[in-house]
Amino acid sequence: MSPRQFYGTPPPGADPALLGGKLVVIEGADGSGRSTQIAQLNNWLERNGHATVQVGLRRSTLVMAELDQAKKGNILGRTTMALFYATDFADQLDNIILPALRAGFVVLADRYIYTLMARAIVRGCDRPWLESLYGLAVIPDVVFYVKVSPQILAERNFQKNAALDYWESGMDIGLSADMFESFVKYQRLMEREFTRMGEQYGFQVLDGNRSVKVIAADLQKRVEAVL
Amino acid sequence: MKGVLIAVEGLDGSGKSTQIHLVKRWLELEGYKVFFTEWNSSVLVKSATRKGKKRLLLTPTTFSLIHCTDFADRYERQMLPLLRAGYIVLADRYVYTAFARDAVRGCDPQWVRNLYSYAAPADVTFFFDLPLEVALGRILGARPKLKYHEAGMDLNLSPEPIDSFRIFQGRICEEYKKIVQEYGLVVIDATQSIEKQQERVRRIIAERIDLAQYRWRIMR
Image 1 (spheres, rainbow over the protein chains, first blue to last red):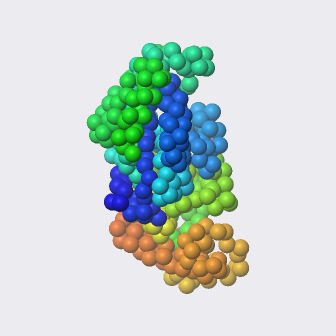
Image 2: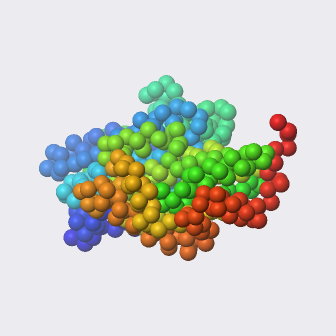
Image 3: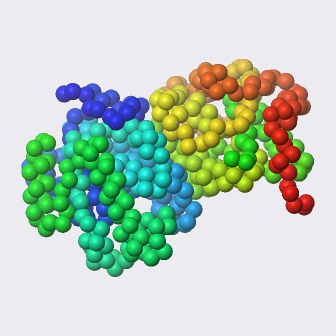
């Protein structure tokens, strides 16, 4: 087993040489079908005898409540927000991802540092700053990016909640006073950033405009190749 | 940036908070626009930090990040806008506290420096230099109940909080020595009387900063 690679310096206590398992990341906007695909992938993996664990954004006990609280007010600066999310990520990295890899699990990540970086970059944070910050992240075995056009994303969000999310519409950065227009513009900016990062970090792009079944089959085949 | 940023650093027990308080009183009473901020005091972030510390949820990385989040909130919402508006901003502990503490907890020093790179360097940073034994004596002489992280218990240096605190402070002291050199902090001899130290601090501030421009323009 060759030691696991990190984007920068591993966090204290990471022991790269002891990390086995697999880290599979699925990225994509809200409404891209990401969560549905992860649930199916999890079933398939467990059916085939792989132990799995799931991680995602805003799931750490450490800062989740405070982050949610902060998002309700209009008082969150972009650097503070980026660092709040980074704390949430690092908490799961140290306490779930790294121990699970050490134990030989397949870790399914419902989004990873890329969404966090894209959001911060779109809000004007410095790219080299973010790259250094997330240097603590272990490099995944594979990253899938479920790509869905902004119009279809909007449709699916309306279908699900009959409303667009304030932050997922980028309303905090003043792209447009019109929420729908802001949503489309924001998602385009995010998509552009993901395309750029896809080249830098080697994402596998999945066409998310296809049916759930077709995407799931495609995903299984690709994950099998990694395992 | 129109404002000016003055910070104080030093070991626990070095008397830096007393000194910055006296600077604040002096400047306020002389009619300058002053804002004071201290380490780990963001209302937004505090409850997360408290919870993390109480339930011992923090790793060296999350300890570092949550303090940086706290700093960022104070920086983005208060320090930076006030500096832009032409205030004298006084900070009880600045980025150097993180550089020292996080390094002792095993974080990569360069990573920590990059983490805080969004913050402007202070115009003047005073370092209150006190021999380790004297600082320890001041804190431990008061027979305090040391908090877990304050004593560096998370580093497994010793099962005894007081022993742990000694070793931990010793390591912080070593880091501070390097930082003072690296960033050219202004060293104040903290063994001198409060009055003497304050006199020197005020003289340096008056020499380095053109204070006149920070007066309130509207008479109150």
